[in-house]
Length: 121
Image 1 (cartoon, rainbow, N blue to C red):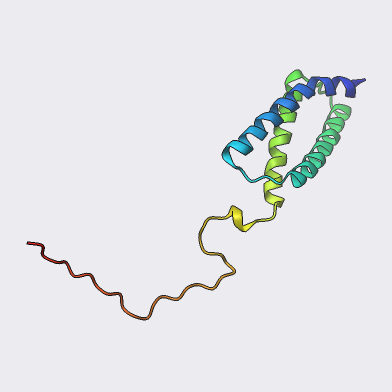
Image 2: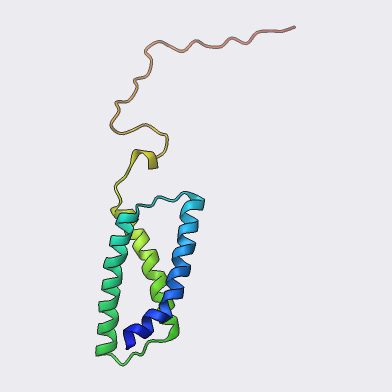
C-alpha cells in the first residue's frame, strides 16, 4: 500500500521533471544518449529505493512530502551526470579543435614573408 501511495505522489513530479529536462536537452543541445540514461536511472532508482528502505527500517525517520520530490529530482539530475560520465566521447561533441588521432601539422620551415607597409601618399 505504501508503494502505491508513493507512486501516485511522485508520478506528477517525475513527469514534470522529465518534461523540463527533455525541453532543456533539445533547447540547449546538451549531450544525451537515451539508452545509457535510462539504464543509469534504473540503477539509481533501485539504489535509492534500497537506501530509503534501510533508513525507514533502522531509524525512526518518517518520510515527509518534500522527501518524495527531492528524491525524484535529485535522482534524475544525478542519473544525468552519471550518464555523462559513462557516455562515450564522440568527435562530434568535441570542439572543432585538432583531433588527438591526427598528427600535428608541422610549422612551415620557410620564414613568413614580412608585410612591408606601403606609403599611399
